[in-house]
Structure formats: structure tokens, C-alpha cells
Length: 348
Ligand code: NAI
Ligand code: MG
Image 1 (cartoon, rainbow, N blue to C red):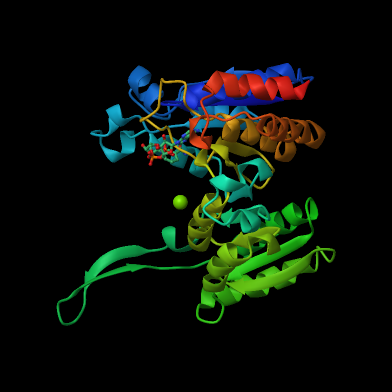
Image 2: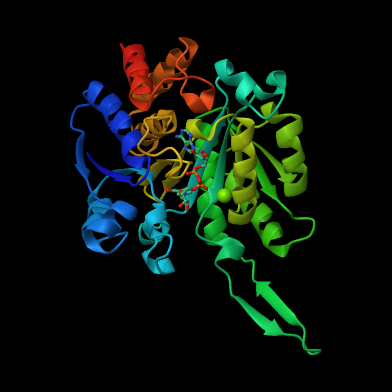
């Protein structure tokens, strides 16, 4: 099994180093690593944020562990040379259509949530967001109306195959957890959503053990704040998922805590913390590496079929937090490598 390590720029290399230490300590049989430049680091060395050799490694690998990109030195470059193009290019080239974002609040961090502690501690969900379709990828443009006014438009559409494959990821994710799936749409108003709901209901026949419910997106936004504990797995489209997953992540405390996966149809995936390259703290040893360490655990669970080892990493992170490990974003003073030390100590 080959893991592509793509540290990127900013705090990316700092957090990837700690995830690599954890993976090395586990001495997993048959797991090998190859590293390549991506983002600002790749642009500075090769003139391109996603060089062919990096894309080639990503394609050959069984899974990708990605740090972050967004070097501000590249801010003045044309859009196609900007570091962020690397992550967009990887998603597109590898057909990564399913974005999984767990939002879990470790009880020790209840006071870091934007919600009241007694509400926040109930949060333990995964949002499954479709990544390759919806209004972001439909026909779009600017035109003039008959009376000469400017009008912008973006067409929202999903075909049934696109809905079915993300619905299956939602059901599979629910099967591996609490067997509860909530499909979020706006079927009272949108035709796209009516098809979404119909296809999710059809797909349910393949997963009779899962309890399926449906919710309108506006209600879901409210319920995420009112009673987040009711959710196990949420499956939704690209636009609704973009908004709801950011909302859910703030309910769960620091941005430095949250991992993510982006999967193709063969369970190959790219795993990364949800945060960016944090130029404001890069090079200072202040970055919280836990989101990246938890991303490595997701990689073992979803792409490398090693759920027991993934559970060990999750448990070690919880134990390190319980023992008081806190980086500055969590109100503490521990450095990036000291946070890594704390997880390593908790593993043994
Ligand atoms: P950001 O996530 O990099 O930082 C936002 C704030 O959170 C900053 O104050 C930062 O110091 C803090 N933060 C982020 N990660 C942290 C961690 N692990 N530990 C402690 N504090 C942490 O978002 P921002 O500032 O909007 O973007 C910076 C650059 O990153 C931009 O160029 C943006 O385009 C890029 N970006 C890249 C992403 C990716 O690689 N997938 C995702 C999001 C943004
Ligand atoms: Mg977003």
C-alpha cells in the first residue's frame, strides 16, 4: 500500500510531519510512503502548483495525505498558477466526488465550541457532501434582460447517477456508524431536490437496515444549532453541503481539530485537515496537528481498510486531550511537535 504524502506550504509540512510520526510509530505492515511537492512549494521549485510528477504519484498511490496550500507569496500570480489550484486539480483529476467531514466534539473541548457545552457535547456526526456536481458546475454566465438590466445565472442540476453514487456513500457511511441517515434537500421548491429525494429513497432499498429521514436545508441549518445530537450521517448536495459543513465545524470547536476525506468510487481518497496553510502562524510551531493526525486515521479507515488502527489513533487523540494536551488554538501553549509527542505517548 502506497501513501502519497503531499505536505504543501505554510503549516502543511509542519502538521504532516506529526501525522507521519504517528503512522511510523504504528509500524503498519506493508505501508510505504512517497512524498511530492504541491501548492506554493511546488510552484517555487517547478513553476507549477501541481507538477506532472505530483499528479502521477497521486494517481499511483492507494491514498493521499494532504497538508495545506495557500502560500501568500503566490497571491499575485494568475489564477491557474495559484497554490489552491493544486487541490482543485487533484479533486477533478481523481474524480473525488464524495467529501466526508466528521464533526465530533471531544468532551474535553466543550468550552471551545460556539454552542453551549451541554448542546455541543452531543455533536458526533459526519456530513457527506457531493463535490463534483450541482450549481457550481452547471451552465453559468452573465446576460442582459430585455430591458437592459444585467442578470447572472447558474444552473443547478443533478442526474440520477450522480445522486445514486453519493447516496450510496451516505448509506455506507451510516452502516459503519449509527445506521441513521438524514438526506438534506429543498424538495418543496426545487426539481433537482425532488429527483434527489426520489433517488435517495430508491437507494434505501439496498440498505434496509439504515433509518432514513429527510430534512429541508433551512430546517437542517436550524437543527444543527438547536439539537445537533440528533444527527448521525447527513448526505447532501454540493451547495447545501458547503454551507452546512462549515456550520457544523464551528459547532465542534477549533478549525485545527477537524479532518476530512474526499473519495472516488473505488474508496481511493485524499485526506486533509479542513484548515488552510495558516500563513499567520506558519514556521512558528503553533499549528495544531490533530486535524491532520485524525485525517490519517480516516485514511486508514476508508481507503486502506484498517479500521482497528484508525480507532487506535482516534483513541490516542482523545487520551492526549484528556491528559491536557493543548496547542494555542485550544487555549494552551504546546507546540506542534509537543502535540505530536502527546499523541505518541498516548498510543503506547
Ligand atoms: P486557514 O484555515 O489557513 O486559517 C484560518 C485561521 O485559523 C488562521 O488564523 C489560522 O492561524 C488558524 N488555523 C488554521 N489551521 C490551524 C491549525 N492547524 N492550528 C491552529 N490554528 C489554525 O484559512 P485562511 O487564513 O482563510 O487561508 C489561508 C490560505 O490557505 C489561503 O491561501 C487559502 O486559500 C488557503 N486554504 C487552503 C485550503 C486547503 O489547502 N485545502 C483550505 C482552506 C484555505
Ligand atoms: Mg466552504
